Image 1 (cartoon, rainbow, N blue to C red):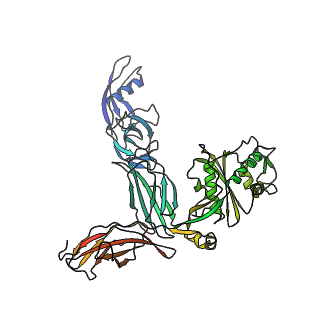
Image 2: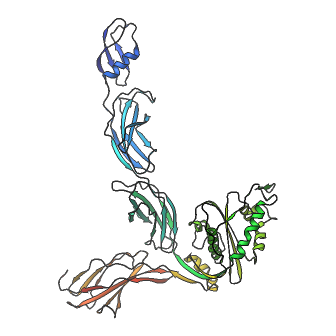
Image 3: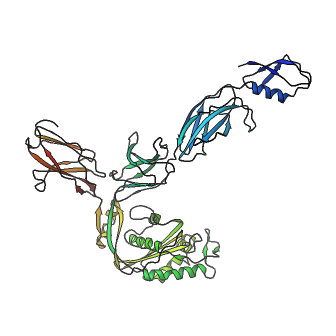
Length: 531
């Protein structure tokens, strides 16, 4: 595009000439004789005389940690100044680009952002402005997608935890599995501070479930970019008695600290060529919260001797109740005294690969220790938990008695350790589904159409009927599908007679049915007419 403008230049001898402005923003003086003209003054006059219309921003789309802007390339300029304002405040320059997209990654959750564009002559902070910018712009409300911090199999179902998001009203949880093409919303949480959810409706052993957590407010919802997944492993509760000996366990603290602060505490380097001497190690503080965790782990290793817990998770999940930045665990069994197990953990005559317990006791990243000790069927079990932990725990009385311990264990592990659990006289309890609620009820001549709400983790339902509210209930139907939520009872009903119904859900665990509680009793009078 060419446009002719009349410009009066400042010069030694005043001359008025014709000037042409090119579409690219370059200036040409045509048919003019100027002596001693200051070109910068001419350009200033040209700039004041003409500007292009503001460019159009096509879209501003919220992404994961960003807002993405898009527009169409124009011949008016190769460079675009991006303008932004936050929460209705003043407009400010954001960046200059020659492209047609831009990602604003300097966004914070809970803020409203408005964007606009302007043509400029170059990618310099002193670039000439070739147009104005649209002072209305495009406005978006930005909410972060929550970061899922853990996903695990638990007794009640799949447990998901995430970080709280600023500026939101709550969270939506979506799920899919198998070949399902899209996600289904399974839960809306209406509190910004509630950051966990247990999906009780993920009962299929061995099935892989996919989850997405979003944040929302009254006008917007975060993106669904980040997906978390887990293979469902059904968990049961295992309970048995152990005999604790914590007074003896606490005596080991002195041995550990003497080792750390003694003369030249050392361990082999990774090539077994140099003894690395640990210097300036301080004493570890005995922490009673860590002791409680170590006691729980001592009981767990009596069933499965491993750094993996019986529920299939890593041992560090036992630390969920404390705040820590680094941690270590030593485990042992078969040593009758605290001196014996401490000397075994010293590993003085081992090489680097065999000195993991030793290096834990010399750990430079730890400031606290807790020690657990229990005796099960005549065998002693020992656990040291090390951590760099914040906060000081209150002193507790040493436990030297028998106590019941309860923890979760996968179905497969229960089967593999059946003989061990039997020797411990362990009891096994499986999670029962919730009681269903009755839905809409329709009656017609000699029949009743029942509906009910789905019970999470259920594999099916049993429906009972009686002519008396308090007694005489008989099973009239077993629904062998957890997703089926209706049944038509036309079994010997009489018009004008009143019947009472109750329903309970069940789930199958280890080949057995685990029943939930009965629903509230439903009273229905059979009508000749549908209603």
